[in-house]
Image (cartoon, rainbow, N blue to C red; front, top):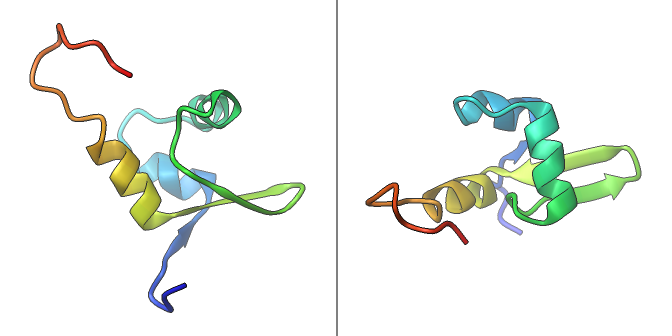
Length: 69
């Protein structure tokens, strides 16, 4: 682990991604389609900033006709 790793709460992830809500993010966690996350306690969820950005960048499209994975 790098000491410059930044950890984000679900609220911070939502503020980073326009249009994202906590319920959308929760559903993405449930379905396994969202960014990687960590769960250090049963009621705590955090995200590495780099994982969120990597997930977001992986959604890049050049056409609305492209099928998302």
